[in-house]
Image (cartoon, rainbow, N blue to C red):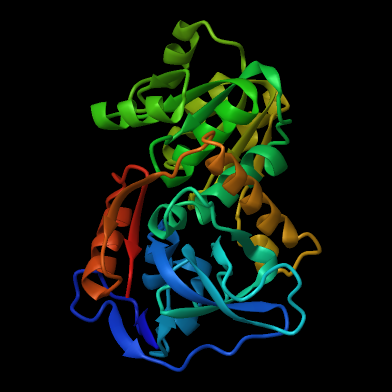
Amino acid sequence: MKAIAFTRPLPIEAEDSLVELELPQPEFGPRDLLVNVRAVSGNPVDTKVRGARHQGSASENTGKPRILGWDAAGVVVEKGAAVTGFKVGDEVYYAGALDRPGSNAEYQAVDERLVGRKPKSIGFAEAAALPLTSITAWELLFDRLGIGEGESGASLLVSGAAGGVGSILVQLARRLTGLTVIGTASRPETVEWVTQMGAHSVIDHTQPIAAQVNALGVPAVKYIASLTATARNFAQLVEVLAPQGKIGLIDDPQTLDVVPLKRKAASLHWEFMFARSMWQTADMGEQGRLLNRVAELVDRGELRSTQTQTFSPINVENLKKAHVLAESGKAIGKVTLSGF
């Protein structure tokens, strides 16, 4: 099968930062699906692993090819003997597991518990934009921050709302809760995008945050989803957070002084969507179930794909473009790739 991998950490501009290979089809276990990948999307995790920053593992420098990619939509072509939820021919979408080969290949083996049925109303490329960010946003809102569906009477501040996770998180919060949703964005095009996603208000994270929120006259900010630049913005986020509030984050600050949270009896929550698969938790199947719920919401017209660009085919040149966009920090929504 055709696959695109990296063999050693290099800047994306380097000629062999990503390479095309011919590899055997992956072996699959009793609970695995073998999926013919039709579309993928780019995520910051791809650039972190390629740059050997993620997990701090020396194994990234061995020269052994590693297939990146943690978003896919495709068709089940074979399945393990213990699979119960899918059949050959099913259209599926998923993010997969960080410690297994990724989706930048014609075929991928993935645990059925991490897989959802692709939304019927959209194509493979639009669907591939959704899994990783939907799982991250859903777990952050409802599992980590503990927000209840239908909850109201407070505000949710989404810092970095125009990116991949922010684009779906704003939609989920607006559709499934009664919270006042405030997004942050700093450019006219990102402000417009966050507004389209459903934010009640958009403020500029390059300006003092608390003063802007106070000027809105909204309910107290009980919840904050900090999706990028947490270290830079943390003092301001603590300032605007209501007493006994909750901050959830997904990025990787080198250090973070959480002591200021004490005077507000506030709490900090980490979201890492690969934790369930990495540790084989008893509730791994929640990821498949929430992807099915997202698909239902998409098919009912309550959520939209966050795809903003699509490159075709899936090859080294186009994957490099996706990595450059992810590393720029200026991507809006999600970039997808379709067709080998």
